[in-house]
Length: 216
Image (cartoon, rainbow, N blue to C red):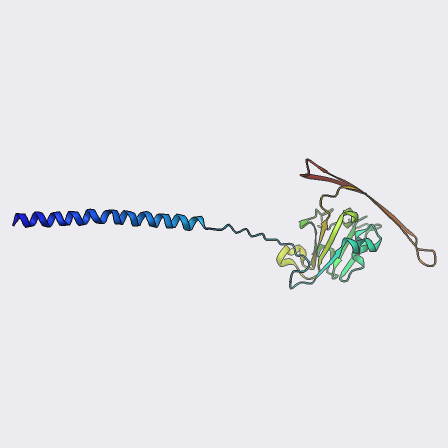
C-alpha cells in the first residue's frame, strides 16, 4: 500500500511540474502580444478652429472680400470698402460729440454698432472707448489679405458681442519689402476729386521667427 501511494504522489508531482512551464510560456506570450498591440497605436492630431472661412458650409451667410477686390475699390479706408457691401452701415463720426469723435464704426444689419464683433486674425480688437466700439480707421488697408463677414447672428460661436454678426480681418503674413500705393480720382465733371496714398514697409527678424511691419 505505501508503495502505491509513493507512485501516485510521484505522478502528481510530475504533472504539476510539467504544467508550470506551459503556464509561464502562455503568460509571456500574452504579454508580448499586448506590447505588440500597444506599439501599433497611430497618433491622431485634430485641429479645431472657431473662425469661419469661405467654402465651409454654415447656417450663417458669409461674405468674403479678397485683397484684389479691395485694391479695385481704390480707397485707403476700410469703412468705405465695407460701406459698399450689403447689410453693412458705416458711420463716420468725424464731427460727432458723443464719445465717438473721429472714429469710423460699422453697423451690421442696422442693429447697432455695439452688437457686432470685430476680429483681426480671429482675435478680438480692443475697443477705443467704454462703449465697446472698435474704430476701423486703425486697421491699415494695405495689409489686409481678406475680409470675412458673417452677416448672420454669430452669438453662438463668438458670444453675445456678435448678435448681428462678426467681421474678421485676415492680415498679410510675413510682409517683407516696400510697397507704395497712390490713387487719384475724379468724376466726369471734373469734381469730387480724391487723393490717397499708402506706404508699407516690412522685414523679417530673428531668422524668420518674427516680422516687423509698418503701414501709413
